[in-house]
Length: 280
Image 1 (cartoon, rainbow, N blue to C red):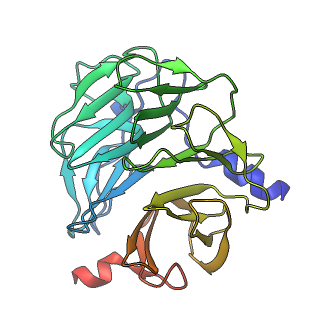
Image 2: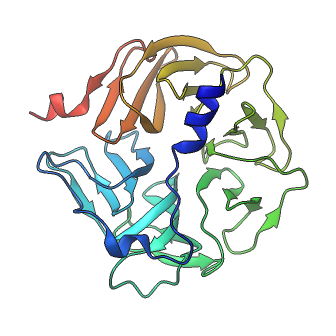
């Protein structure tokens, strides 16, 4: 358990104080076409299965091989989708950007091709973001909520968030922490620990179902939005992000991004295949 907690806290790369990390970024994609910068978030379009990765070097569509770079170079430390091509993000500006450091909350309404600053420019680097049916939940050292992305309110009872998960169609939010899974049913305003939940590093929600992954790569799924969990298969490599969609009434399709590729499961996380296999 101690080793798992140490792994949990070590998986989110932190920028040096006052430094523009993207200014010294590595090349944006490898020879195999996969982004080389740290992966900080993922979104999958349920209609097209396009897989978007938010990375140290910006946003990439990895549904194609080689991956396609989208928009400017911004170190997207926090990232979430509000659906219909609308993304929210936070982090640090890249070379040539006129955004302040940190960028605060920024929004794109064209799938990441362009970004507009919304709030907390020069103040907040949200390392965790989630879109709910009532706005945005963010963690920049404090857990905060916003109904419109422009004004923020700190929640009364703070928890040390590592990762946030929600959907823009529901008020439920999941938060992974060193001490275990926390769950909110009111858009992040109040939180309760989930008894018996595994120690999860990342979670994802879809239509009342959820998927999660431990620091060791063990996959778990939930049919009641994170209240109870069932152990599934495992995935090799260090996970960096997870996404899921409910297919029909019974099957969860699950994507897991690592630093070397994206794996997808069509059987509730029992087995995984590299998405590049289907691109060849």
